[in-house]
Length: 328
Image (tube, rainbow, N blue to C red):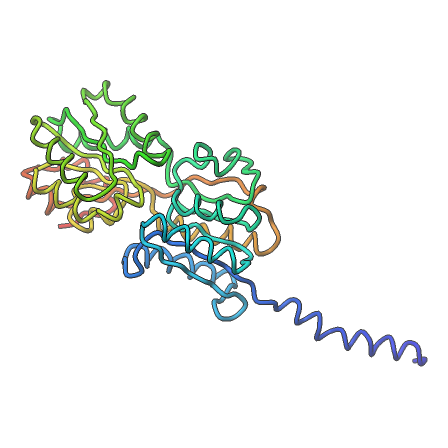
């Protein structure tokens, strides 16, 4: 080998450690959760996200650092934590609890990629240009489509055929709260139902509104739509439904685990697992603008028979046969 070739070889060998070091750069992920840090449901969801990331090769404390902020449902806390996470200059952010966290993160940054989980109407909220072509720095996974509201009414009618009046608990300050009520209202006449919107802002308002609805007539029921606020006050909502003998259907499984009557909706744990795949793809170079927003692929039906008996209800065998889980 001549002298020039030998020097070239040495130069290439010297560059190897530098190249390896560049490949091993620790990436950074920020996760914003609008829930209390000790909330068992959201602990399970975030655990599913982290487990799936690990299965994809992203190990917290190894080749990736994951910063998680638990912001409860206070809007000021959520904005503050969103700003903190954006200031860390992460490679990707995860809006882990729907509309309220996406809005805060998009306000904090329009450049860092954002993956959202369980958002109901990202187009209506202005988060993406379209489901097929998001176009900005955010993409992710739908909680469900508005048409699911009609399914909630059908299931409520199936379990309690006498129901003719339904109060719909919603957050009036988010687009999905209005949209879900609208979809349910469109389906109500064909089922012989009359709907009443119940705005959710704080505990006293919820208690007053549900109590007033229960006392205003017979044959009443409840639909509890998903939002950070209904999650925050879920124990109160379940207690009120039981106290006033109101059969209720919920958009989140943890209501039924906590004593609610029936849940029908997506398998949210599966949604968090799937969200990890988009984080992985973005870390490998893809852009959120090019990743279509995806709909749920797994749904669950859960019935609490103990609650049904307390309400004096007999659940139809056909409904129990379709249930993914029956709580006794």
